[in-house]
Image 1 (tube, rainbow, N blue to C red):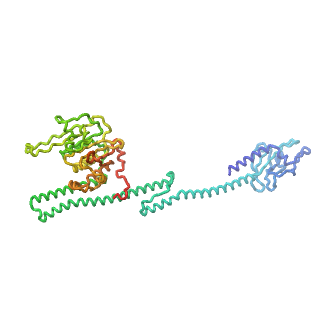
Image 2 (image 1 turned 180 degrees about the vertical axis):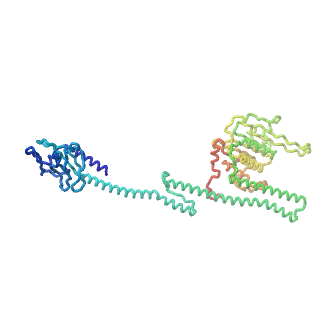
Length: 550
C-alpha cells in the first residue's frame, strides 16, 4: 500500500508542478487594476472543483484565497510567503494541513506577475490528499478481503490435499494392526507412485512384509526339516545300537559260548560300531554345513582334483579302470602307450573286454597317455600261478595342458570341500557298481553360465527317473536289497548337495550313455567374478516353500 500511495502522491505532485507555473489564479480570482493598484475578487460563476488558490503580495502577506468545493474542508494556507521563499522553492510540492484536521493538501508556489502592475506576486495552488487516501483505503480493503479469502481458501485446500494425500495411511495402519495380530499375508494395495512419500512407504512395507513372510515360511520349513532329520537320525542310530545290544545280551545270557561264536559276535559289534561312527561323522558334517562355517573361498583348479581322486580310487579299487578327461584342451594326436604295451591295452578296449559300454568318454580317453602303477609283488606261495592276484587296471589321466586351451576350469570354492564332494561321488559309484566297472571323471567349463564343472560317470544300474529328485534328501535310500547290502547311511549325496549349495554351485544326475549314472557338479568360475563379489553372494537365500513340499 505504501508503494501505491507514494505513486499516487508523485502523480499529484507532478500535476501541481505543471499547474503552478500557469495562470490558474485568473480562472478563480478576478483581477482589476485601479490607479496602478490591483484589486482581487473571488469569481462567483466558477464550477466547484478541488483546486485551491492563494495569492501573496510583494510583502509576503496573503491577499486572497479562492477555489474548492467545501469551505469547511479548506486548507490552512500559510499567513505569509515571501518572494525569496517562492524563488527558492518554486515548483516544489509540500504538504499543508486541512482546516477540518483531515488528510491535508499538497501545495506548490511560483512567481505570479499581474498585468499592468510592476510588482510580482506569489501564486500558491493546493489539491487535497483525501482522494488518494480513499483510493489507498479502497485498495487496502480489497486486498484485505482477497488476502482473507486466499488464506481461508488456502487452508481449506491444504487440508483437503493433506487429507487426500495421507488418506492411504489409514490402510497402512489397518495392515499394521493385522500384522501385529499375526496375519503376515497382508499386503498394501493401491500403491501410489514411488515419487511420493506414501508410495515409497507402501513399497518399503510390502518389501519388508514379503521378506518377513518368506523368512517365517523358511523358518517353518526348517523346523519341519529338523524334526524329520531328528526322527530319521534317531531311527538310523537306533538300528546299530539295537544290534550291539542284542549281541551283548546274547553273550550275557550265555547263548554265545564258543570261540567262533564270540569272534562272530565281536565282529558284528565292531561292524555296527563303525557304521554308527560313520553315521555320527556324517551328521556332524551336515550340521557344520548347515551353519555355513569353515568355508574358505579361493581359486581351485578342478584338474588336479580329478587326477588325485582317480589315484585314490586306484588305491582302493585296483581292478577299476579310471579315466580322467580334460575337455578344456585339445587331445594330442595318437596314443602314447607305455613301452612294450600292445594297442589292445587302451582304456576303450579294456572297457569293451569287461563288457562295459563303449561310451564317448571311453573313446576320448583312448587318445590320452596311460600312466600305470607298477604291479604289486606276487607272494612266493603264488609263484606257481595258484592264487595269483588279478591284473591291475590302468589309470588314464589327462595330460598337462600343453596344447591349445580355452578358459581353464578354475573355480571359486573351498578345495577341501570340493575334494570331499568328488570323494563322496566316487564312493557312491564304487558302492553301486561292480568291482571291475570303469569310472570316468571329466572336467570342463560352461562359459555361457560362468561355471566350471566336474563329472563322475559310472556304468552301473543307473538312477531311475522317478527317484532322481529324491536321492539328495537326507537318509533317503532306495528300498532295494542292493541298498541294504551296501550298508550306506543315506547321507553321502546329502552332504554333496549341502557342500555344493554352500559353494554357490549346482549338482544334478543324468544317465550315462549306454547305462549308468553321471553326476554333474558345477561351481562359479574364478574369472566370472571377483573374490569380493563372490563373498557377497547370499549363502542362505530365502526361498518360498511350496505347499505340500513335506
